[in-house]
Length: 151
Image (tube, rainbow, N blue to C red; front, side):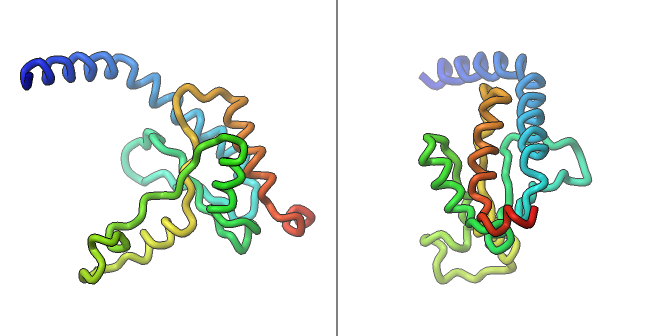
């Protein structure tokens, strides 16, 4: 079974490599659409492009400053969920996982802030411009009324 499993895995990987460039281009397009649709909102920032290499934008993540935006990342997640749209918090830092409770931690402030303020948006390669616009519209709807008057 081991040889057959490796053969099947190799075939799948070769097939996916054929569409890799197309999928990465789609992920980048989705990220740019979100950025264009949400960049003007107070308290919303996007994960920056690293100064090295090229980002594949495998995942679209926004940071939400709840005080500035008027809604927390969890409130935005629940608003999306109410419309049957899945989003999720950024992964919980290892040092906050129960299995590591009581272990020594070096640093952790950045990962804690990302976990507290981050939200992973839908970014599957099957998403259309209309899908991205719908998600962005719901997020824009989470901007508190008093913040809307200022913008």
